[in-house]
Length: 247
Image (cartoon, rainbow, N blue to C red):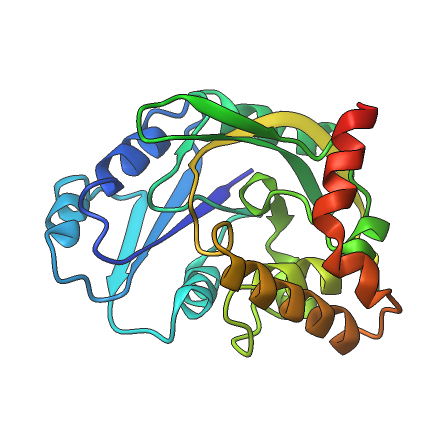
């Protein structure tokens, strides 16, 4: 089973080498690593070229943003499964891909969902973001599984489409809604903590981001013909607190 890992980057010289080494250190060997660079102005490309080998594909050219770059990576992928690894993140261990492959071999599914850890620059873990209690129905109240923990069969993108460029920070939410709720793909919780992720990503900070993602969650559900309560989505922060207290 071949696994395609896609990393999108732009001016990522500070973190990209750590990300690349995290892929190269995996115990599973049949990995196709695709790096899509948005025409970086720093020395990101020099670092990428330093690690260039047969199993690594890369392009560098202007794009229309994060999701356009992800779509380029998907179009380059030839693996049975596709996973996303952000340019400032790493795999949580050297055996992650080996574990993912084993899980998909044991289960006839279109996608697996797992967990990630979020940490600060100093390495201090601030959160375990788990999919253990997630289900597609929770998309209707604003909850999605951690995007980097999902491994999709590549054929799903050919069948149901790629990331919608009409979204600024919510195209991953829309794609997950389209796959899991609208088209009801088969999936299973893997229990694997796939990724160590730096806090402060594109859609994880600030009041303005919260308002924008709230708007785009509603847009994603509406586009896919899913009935939902706008009030519940706006109040999702409180549902998270209640869920945490129940646990």
